[in-house]
Structures are given as structure tokens and as C-alpha cells.
Amino acid sequence: NFYRADRRAQLLRQCWENEASKVELKGIVGSAPALLASAILSPGETGDAGSDEAALRDAPSHLFVLDDKESAAYFLNDLQQLLGDTHNVLFFPRSARVPYQEEVTENANIAMRAEVLNEINRHGKGLAIVTFGEAVAERVISKRELSEQTFALALGEKYTMDFLDEVFIEYGFSKVDFVYEPGQYAVRGGIVDVFSYSFDHPYRIEFFGDEVDSIRKFDPITQLSVNKMTRAVVVPNIGDQSLHESVEPLFNFIPADTRIWMADAKRTERQLEKAMERAESAFERVSDALKFTPPEALFIAPEKLQSLLEPFHVIEFDGGTTFADRVVIDWDMIPQPSFNKNFDLITSNLQANHRQGYHNVIVAGQATQIDRLHDIFADREAEVPHNPIPIELSQ
Image (cartoon, rainbow, N blue to C red; front, top):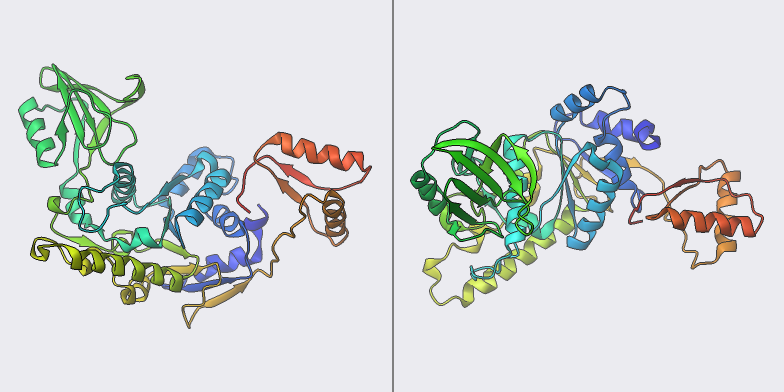
């Protein structure tokens, strides 16, 4: 609430009233960018759950581009802790595919990328997507082709088993006895199990004759149902170049009103450069290069990044000064001091903060940690005004 009401947060919102604004958040440290973003993303405290949900459905999506996978994971955790269940927070990883070694792939990463693209394609609003330079370096299936290659079936619709066989084989799915990873399907009598690349659980589709009688998500290990569904959406391996003809940068796939938060656009550009260099090196080593798509068709050229960002609202929050016409919003923060378990130093620091008019807020991943700190202050007979919050933040 402090962040939501802050004048600098209001100034950021005002910038978004202008076309394709570029903003530098100067002097904002630690987990503060995630706190600011969550304050802007989360619905206001209206008390009306229905109106909050409607506001989320109409709100622009936000794409957060960090420097690397580790910093993206920390940022993702911060957002998830702060937003809870109020928001759809998604992680967009790199495919983990080694360029020009198609057998070296990571199905979990492919599935996560497919889930994000499918969510953008279906809704496009109210999403919070966290990613990093290497992940956005890879081009993605075009929106048109994803729509064409997405197969949905719903309760009451009719399909023959032969037709479903054709669809799944065309999508490159393997027919197995029991599904356990994306890209597999199984048929047993009037039951079809299929593990789409865009979901974390497989579907179990039961037929009455040719009619879809029930759709459930289930756990492939326990075989127990997770929840009932009214429709199933099957997406093929979006990382398999043989299944689609055209690819495009992620920035062309996301809606035009998406807010793009970047630690530093120049550092992201360098990550794109490294990804391209690795791909070019691998391409030079393949024996028959004519069989393969050249690197420039699979990865974003680093020099193209700024032009791709031009149509969007872009916020840099970790030292980025990329855009000459940017608005600078100064937060004037300093990092938390390092106390090195010196509790006398912690006590005197928090007391000094209080005297200067600051609100001390202490967060910890476990409530017992906060209780322990309270006991330490009590042992010192020190009055340390603070608000304890049992959540876990990275900084």
C-alpha cells in the first residue's frame, strides 16, 4: 500500500498515458522493483472480488526481463510472494535446446514456454511474465501458427479415435501405454490421455461413444484427478522447427499495450549477442549446414532489440540508461546495511530509523525467525518499533 500510494508510482502511471514511454527508475534497490510492480499489478482494495477480477481481465500484461536465470528466479519468487493468488505469474525460460543438436532438449522448459505463449494467445491481459535475456533471444512460433496448431475439444463434442490419432501424430506426439511427459498420448478403450506441451498436467478425456463425456487433469504418477475441466487445449512442441514455418521475436507476439520492465536493456542486448554467437559457432560445426535453419532466423539479432522495444512502454530499473528520451524517476533508496549477525547494530539501526520518521518493516520466510528476533530485542530490553511480515523476499 505504501508503494501503491507513493507519488513516484503515480508518476509512472502517468507516463503510461503517453505513447510508448521510456522510464528509468533511478536509485531503486533490492526487492523494491518487485514491490512497486506488485503494487501496480494488484487490484486496489475495493472489497469487491468481482470488480477486482474484472479489472485484472482488462489490465495490460507486464513482461519482466532480468539479466539471467538466477536473478529472474529471485524476481519471480518475490512477485509470487507479494501477489499470492491474485495474479497469474508465469516464468518464460529458455528452451534449453543446444543449437543444431535437436536431440538435446528439455521438455519441461519447452512446456513452460508453450504454456506462456498459449496464455498470451488466449488472454493477453492481466499476465505477469518473468524471463531473462537468453530466453527472449530465441524466436517463438508466430501467433498465427500457434492458433492454427492449437487443438481444443470440449464437453459434448464428437470425435472418432482415428481422427484424434491423426491430430496427435501430426503434432509429433508419441503413442505410449501411459503418459508421463509432454508430447505423449495413450488410448485405452473410450479413454484418451494426452499430455499437452502447454500444461503442467495431462488430460484424461473419457468418451461415451464418440462424444466427449468428461475431461479431467490428472497426476501421471498417482493417476488421481487434479480437477475437472470443460475443455482441453492441446499444443504441440513449439520448439520443434519442423512443425511450423514462421517464427518471430517474443516482442512481436505479446500485445501492444504490454508494459516491459527490464533490469537494463543494454545488458539484455549483450545476452542476445552471446546467444547469437553460440548459435553461429554451432552452425559452423554442423556437417551439412544446408539442412538447418541459419542462426539469424532462430535468434534475435542484438542490434534489433531497441527497434523491437520502440513501440512499447519500457521501464529500466537496475541502472539502465538506454533511451535518450526517457523520464527519470528517482527513488533515492540505499541498500539495507550488512549487519553480519551483530544484533546490537541491528537494534541501534532500527531505533535510529524510527527516530528519523521511518517505518521499520521486517520480513522473513518463517514466522519463527521473526519470533527469534523479537526475543533478541526483548533480551536486550530494547524498544524497537517494527512491523513484522512473514513472507520471503530475495533482498
